Length: 422
Figure 1 (spheres, rainbow, N blue to C red):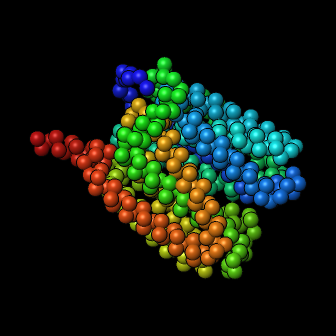
Figure 2 (cartoon, one colour):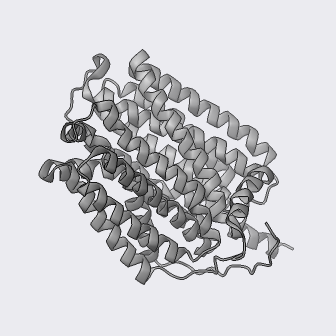
Figure 3 (cartoon, rainbow, N blue to C red):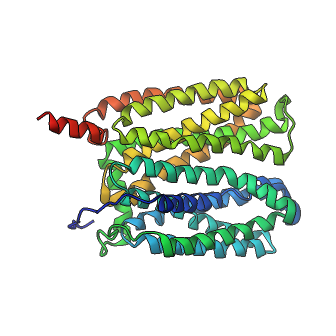
């Protein structure tokens, strides 16, 4: 990519309303990936396809999302983000309506693929928020937006069950379309313009994509976070895939809950996610390196609690709170570090990181289902503990090589104190 002159982005302290708008936008977009996940049985009956074939609906949606991450999100560094997000939300709304109206299975797959691509708006919003937040609040702002994204994922399963019980599986698609259209209007009229995103408007699109590979090659910190992020999302996906079997009574489980009740367990994850922005606040104070140790330790603890929760529902709920706090904490610490690397390339950094992150999710879903079938909940937890230990050890190694990297930073208070001592 040709070298270009860039001007430093001006940052202002974001209002709570704007942060809330970004969080809801990220959550509503990410939730579009999972609305149909609890309803696959109803889809298979309505469209006269097998359960396995119906399962492709979610897979195709996620494939569309990965393509959006790879091909759409990088544009956030080169075009007006407000227009990009508004356009993606509008496309999402139209695709959701189309999916709800499609009479056949093939047409449904086409529509949910478009839904997946347009859901990448969630990952345009995150670096957008980071770009316009002040340096002293960036971790906190990203934390709130990422919490909104995770809460959107977790609540989407709960909402879909409630709406489908009243109006059938197609009803949730129309409700989601109305929500996306509302968010498109809100972003278009209320979101700030922010700094000039078009750092190189003449850049060729293929050069933009190649520049992502260049960033991965040049940025050691990015490579570290990609590995840790993929491991983190693999654990998250494996747990939430396997727990559905556990709660449904599969594999001689002591539980035997209905689908509606199983969906409500996602609320425990929401509570854990709501507590996670504290990680971003701590990172803003200059303790990013220490925070990484803590959140991986929390994950190890959470897997032990999850294992015990296989036989005690109260312990299981507590474990879900701790687990989602740990997962979200790792994610926030990772993204705070990634977004500190290059102010002019946050969307491309997001693409590199999130492609690795969701690739880990695909692997985790497969491993979680396989592990539960082979060895039950105990094997799932054993693998989870192993992954958390690997993450902790990997971070210990990475932290040494990053010891003097500017991304580790120090708090604003410490910087001021250091200047005063000179």
